Length: 447
Image 1 (cartoon, rainbow, N blue to C red):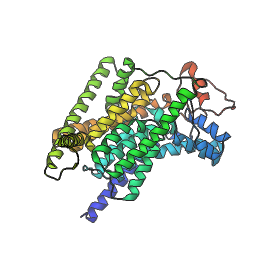
Image 2: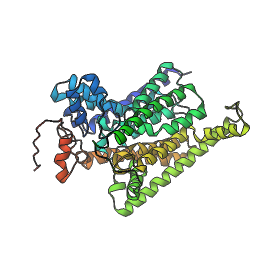
Image 3: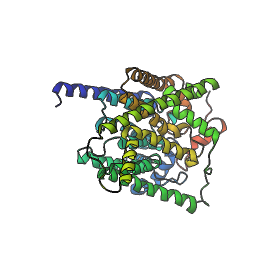
Image 4: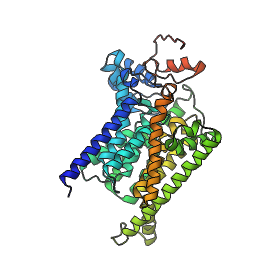
């Protein structure tokens, strides 16, 4: 039974953590709300929305990318059909604002099979908000890169209990996962883990969630195949799939070191970068060992209960039960890290697994560390991991506000300058990419 005093403390913690998260979203780059802009391909979506009916712009496909991104479609449609021209970018910015906050909200309202206090939920949520985008201003408050944040939302739904004991929340989770899959490719990459968990859990709500991701995957896959084989003579091809060892090394650094140690892991001397990468690996390994031990302890505690699998051969039951231990909620971020990073590394994105493409894998690294901190029974280990988390959040706050990373990562104000993250001779091209077709743009050099 929950006492009134406990309820009040819980509500106070939730309100405080929500206020802190909201403040950080606003204060990191307040110019994006006071002077919103179109970022990159948002200009192409807005250009289409000004020429199409509202329902047509909602299903517009930007074939240079080749997959559906409903946040950009919705933001561009609202901006073109409901707002004055000068405020049109505010629509895409507000959509991105809500989606960037969605993992934080899900952490507070979903039920988990492991204990998470309101303070722990707030700490995890703010860490995902601040640390995963350390130096990644390019993914801040724009609907094109909202797919990274809804990818994190999909991961949190997978970590949560399949049955939330409320039909409305269960149905909302299914709808959210369908939209996550239609927002980009990160949630689509998670389908193998969703399938494995659905097989092991044998829960109808988890099956519905997997079906939602599966349907979105089929839609996105069909669009990508059509782009590849149906439009290859019309649109330029991207770089072919393959493994770039240099890009993988950079991606490992930005996945395992950047979320934990900040920009020093990528801007420091070669020795510093190497040391921080090894430290990041070591912290993840220690966290994984802690989570495996926790999962084994839970399995032993449940050994005396009725078996979960009543059908099939004894060997099949044994395999399914071992798979269930390997796919326990605490270990799911590890499997998500593997499949998402593998998909990115194999060339799903041109340019290699660096920059914004490592935000979702980096978020899985943070989840692994946080869950190890929650699961550990050792006071010293919890203290060490809390220190790492505090340093991670501190670097996430310090670097963007003190190293002028926002400007060089393309979040400058003025909506016609939306993609102004190019440098040198590429800068005018980057600016023009975000402007509707037929517009006249004057580019002035900075003094």
